[in-house]
Length: 120
Ligand code: HEC
Image (cartoon, rainbow, N blue to C red; front, side, top):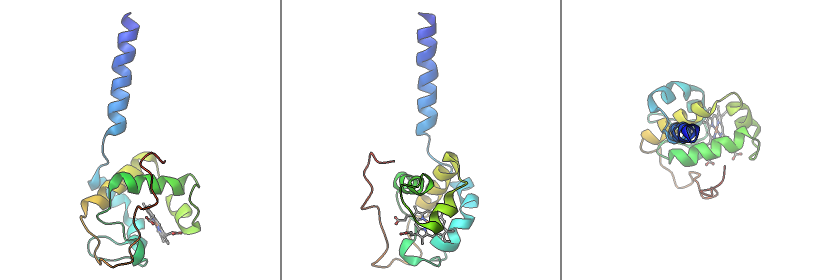
């Protein structure tokens, strides 16, 4: 009985740590490479149609992970996110969401239309 309780406590802790949001501050440092292409709050990036600033962190993480796992193919992106850890993805996504809005809003910015809530 005791071990069942312990198991319950441990799994609650594991679950709690999994839902923890990313750390936008360390994300800012980790996003240095992303910023060149995707911009930030003061630069649209060299691909302004895929500015990430202000977008929902969960959706950004889902999409970034699709490139990590090869579910989405884009040689540039697959290469760019190859070495990221789960934590890196959370942090960078939190950072981008924290920026509020893209530096250069434009009608053609790509969004999360193709992301299903349950998709990984
Ligand atoms: C060399 C340029 C380059 C770098 C560096 C780069 N990306 Fe990208 N990224 C792209 C391009 C181009 C696309 C669009 C790919 C496509 O549609 O095939 C894209 C797409 C994305 C998307 C999907 C956007 C959408 O909704 O369509 C996400 C999320 C993303 N990148 C995250 C990142 C993150 C996080 C980093 C940093 C670790 C990063 N990218 C670094 C070029 C880059």
